[in-house]
Length: 353
Image (cartoon, rainbow, N blue to C red):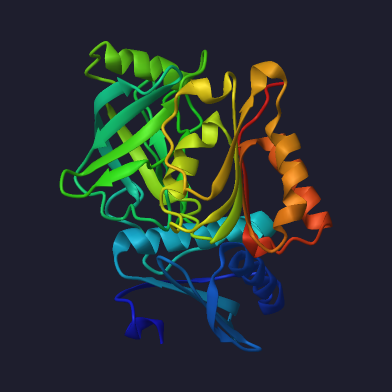
């Protein structure tokens, strides 16, 4: 029983979903994230995640029941949110009707949300800034999930921070008070000081650049922000890997590279407008081959990734860049039968049409 291992649990009925259909959802999720099954029967399925567990059971009364369990309230919320997002992707009508048994929450803010203050922004080479965020509790930010949403206060109206939707997921306003909420990577954590360090790629325009300028100018109503997380993929620990990134993925790539085994081997392709002159600090394992691509000279990350992928079938492939490029690389690796659990191919930005 899940309750024997985790003190916090919640349940929901998945009305309109069949056990067979949800099994396929869980199988795809487990394969892509490298999760393990503790139960895998004809009418009972249990999956262990880094935050807790998810259990599916066929029941006569409602057809299908989902139970989630975790060690604390924050982790429970994150497991519930993950379940909702997985169901939403395949069965949006089912996701919309989900109601968890822990019901209404006393605090309208999501359990994985917290307010923080930006205490420092400093230059990090010619095209990056390093921001230090300080709050009450950053204990949930480890190696298994290294991304978070940085919610910047609205400049158009009173900020409407996220709330909890009836199905247990975070609900964001779409009005003028909605905060800007880009995703960033945790570059470092100081648990004693309650600090998260993140690096921001400097680019023209955009709400984040406006926020940075206002915080640097000393605007006291802009240095308090919200964060939601942790989220996304964790630190790769493969012995042999191909890593490809443009500037938007440099902080995540740097975090991963410095945590690879000391004897790791493989190739790293890094694309920046002026190549290595971007000055972003990396620490590379001594046996990794590093190639800097200079966009100003016509070098392209996708070309390098496509050319190198055939040499890494069955090995870890990590890509961070433009969304359409990521889609094309996913299709190429799928056509070449690369195992899906070895791939982490992400689109961090999109070309504006």
